[in-house]
Image 1 (tube, helix red, strand yellow):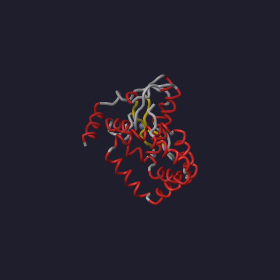
Image 2 (cartoon, protein in one colour):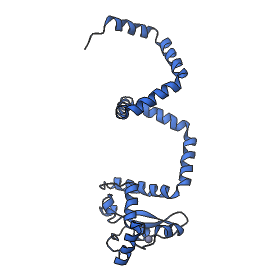
Image 3 (tube, rainbow, N blue to C red):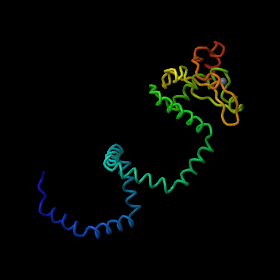
Length: 214
Ligand SMILES: [Zn+2]
């Protein structure tokens, strides 16, 4: 280890002796120049994004416990505000909310059974697009399903309970009732293993091609 120079040692001693005074001065400076400091941080973050992310990650790992405690304190203090914001978001996006709830249920089941794979909401929506935004069982289009208070949900062709994977290759869009609606092909299929993806008639697949081309 390098031996500290005399000057450094002196300044360390000075700091230890006047720690409270120095910290108070620093705090006062930070309070007074809060906006300046934020702007400087912002500029640094924009000009060196990768370096900033690396440093932030390293700092998080160094102070993980402290960081988690701060988050917990913040969440407790602003619990009402946060729940109000998320309630408002859920009210504005009912279909996305339902889709996310179904997805998290799938993820939970997949984790329980150690099923392989995962998929994103975007991947599921592009799968729906490939099949012309229709339920593969009753062939109803998404607009019609919304009127019946149903929506397209990901269904596992081979159910997770029977050892199926949770990857997008094992997913097909089927309809499912949302609040106020009834029935749905996803409920009817339940835990049976039916692959509707290959069962589309040629006339229907022609319609799908026309839909997707639009
Ligand atoms: Zn259906």
